[in-house]
Image (tube, rainbow, N blue to C red; front, side):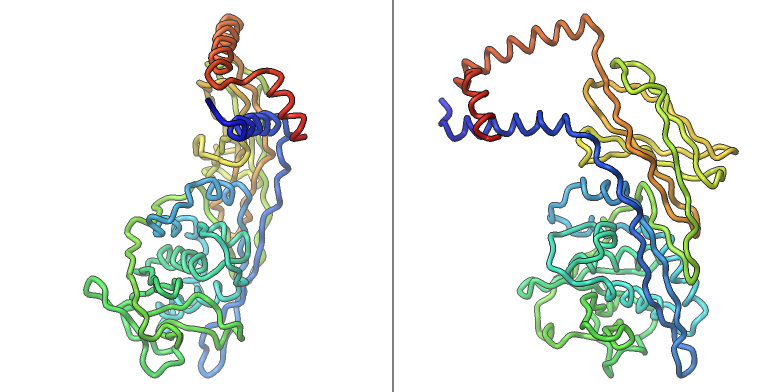
Length: 382
């Protein structure tokens, strides 16, 4: 026999789930666009560049809905999502004498401009889109960009201090750090130079660089974590551009109907603007509007259109949206979210109803629920 408190809790949970299923689909937020100042050595002075970055709600919500357990923090490092960001940063520094180091320092410049705020653990895209984070989330973002740029990176975890930064392997000893000697850790026969991702809150040109070592970390025990298990592929990419604003883009999504039976063929189609061929389109699917999974990925045809045939195997309400990304110097775009109702055939519905009444009767006897109890609990809650 369940206690009254547990029974009431179960009833409330069921009521909330039912209530949520009738809520309208939430409206889609606009892209999150940010700019970051970058500097490169030019003789005895600095040459300034501006990195424009844009990401879409669908990619953010894809990562938001994934598991956030911290058994292996390397999963929060997602290099593929930052392929374009790394490529654009390399375009600024690749011809410099110490380009590898300057590229690494540019990534530090970027994350140092993201406000510090204690937070729960997040994926790199979440940190970028939220525009805030703490030592570990800043480190996951920086490591994602560095790995996307081809550098060898590890996470440095100072367990007693509850602090995280990263180590970067370079082909030369850092020359731009503020310290006379660059700090590093040996791991698997390589030197990984410390790269502190939490800003000191000063001018970006005077902040931490590769090889600098915060004094409060001196003597602290460090755990070095390999990133060999970091994510290999992402459904979409963050867009970026150096010194020029990103051009706008859009995507549409159309369903042949909004009501189907299980096993029916759902015709999904749409187009992108600009109407470029061979562009990546991701179809996302959700049953909750919170957890989104990838239904499929497609490429646009010669006219910038895409189409897909899907046969749902389960009944219920689901939500579909399309996303367009991966185009150099163009913003990514999300379509509107469409609601789709999948029903059973009439005979199957009758069978389910009969089974449902049988289960309800069994549960009523097992849990000692009654209709009056359920109604009274819901009324008291409301």
